[in-house]
Amino acid sequence: MGKGRPVEGKIALEEHLSTPLNDALWDATGEAERNGKTYMADVRAHLADAGERVALMDEHGIGTAILSLTSPGAQSVLDPREAVDFARETNDTVKRDFVDAHPGRLEFFAAVALQDPQAAADELDRAVRRLGAKGALVNGYTNIGDPGTGRYLDHPDNAPFWAKAAELGVPVYLHPREPLPAGHYLYEGYDSLTGSAWGFGHETATHAVRLMLSGLFDTHPGLQIILGHLGEGLPFLLPRLEHRLRKQREGTGLGRARRRVGEYFQENFLLTTAGHFHTPALRCALEAIGSDRVLFSADYPYETMAEAAAWFDAAPLCDNDRVKIGRNNALRIFNLVPGPS
Ligand code: ZN
Image (cartoon, rainbow, N blue to C red; front, side, top):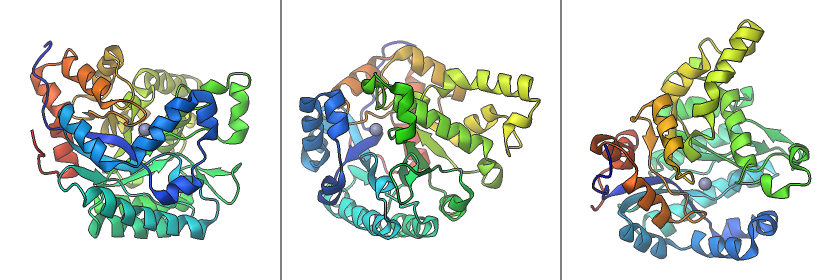
């Protein structure tokens, strides 16, 4: 245990990009107001750049990055047909301009339009089988025709999508987005809390709990969901959720699920270090879920690879855990060939 050798050839999997099509749609003015115009202008420039990203990966011992379209992506396209076209075009662009431009260094998670769950299933199939996508990344709830309406992933209409993810054996990364407009009331007077500083985690942790209580993992016991930010607080909070549901609701609070939430967490979830470079939180995540289910990530360009890698390489871990979290878990889960080290 202690400061070991840095892991070379690390694999990072919450790493974001944008495309010209997404840029035309992406409204970051809210984030810019809240998070600082200079910061967001900087992020925007880095999102589109593949070459600069690979140079930074070289500098910080990252062999491979699995990329995804920045939040909210396809989930915020109001018209279902447009959303389906948007996802398909995004995946083709990402494959051509990022993955094929840097073979062996950049991989990707598919964008999917859950406005039409069957189309999302078909696109996931195409993206995985024909384009080599490593799974899908979904940015929270999906707007259905109106920015005030959101459908969460536990909705029964999403059944074809989940069946396809299970059939292909690929994970789904549940990435945050801001709460629905009605949910902003909680943060009234404190706009800076709605986004990544606080609201993202609150929104995404609740979304993950909905999945656990929905019975989804009884239907598809092998399904794997990835959460960033060391599990959005769940490693710390889930035991109390489970305790109170049992004590106060006599089990009825468990929704349609047959098992305890903690069992699903340990068997159906994977956590990344994206954007949460804090050793006590890492220890908590490792205690809750074990070192086979925690994976290194940066959350570039919202975070820097320099900070993510420097923290991780010096974190108090035994060498075996550091190599698993930094690289080997991802090699196993995504069937990757080791990159340069
Ligand atoms: Zn992110």
